[in-house]
Image (cartoon, rainbow, N blue to C red; front, side, top):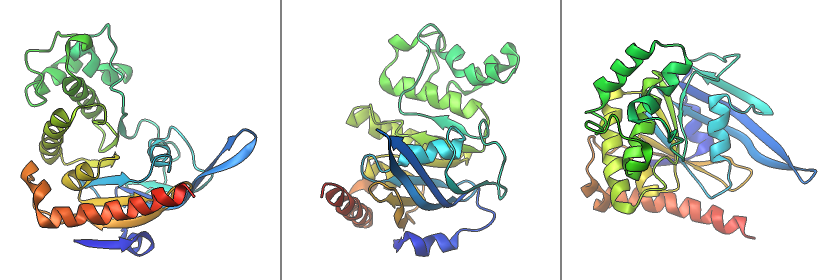
Length: 272
């Protein structure tokens, strides 16, 4: 286990990182006054890595994902994808948000292929690609089911399948499991790890669940209270694949304690 102040750990970022943020800042206006949201954020994720971001509520985690996705722009700083600074980032990453955003009038297959349809992929080939993945996503037999008939976990699987079918090399996940109960969430974490190991995409996960962050990640960033900065970077060098038995392993517990201590300090500071 290694844990470093962010300013030190980020110096290890390579120019070939899949995602690299350099001194990204963002300020919004609230009630006519400036509200700093992000302040000089540095962050990187290498090709095929699973990286999580944790921190107190309101620290700018979701704003950071929106900036990476191209849904928002920073006031200053640079965003590099695949070592270059793209003029437009919108559409270059897969983005799965907290709500599954499934259309109630479309069945599982039709919801899964929505992104492909918007890109102009023919309906027949879109459906064939989705149907080929139904079993591995635990959705076999539910292809014609509508969202109201699905459990929360299955709805999230459909949403993740839609993200995967977008066929991007970078996935951004904004608290995708937060609405699930503890049992379904644990099962989904194991399933998500298995799916990521088979896909080997670059994943950035925002979560409030420290267990989830350590269990799934190669590296975890801790953000400060607003304005968000990277306070701590923790490398998670636990062997894969990981089972839920790992949650009681002393090394896992020590990593969790290190992250919680950093988050707790920020949460207390935010109330002063």
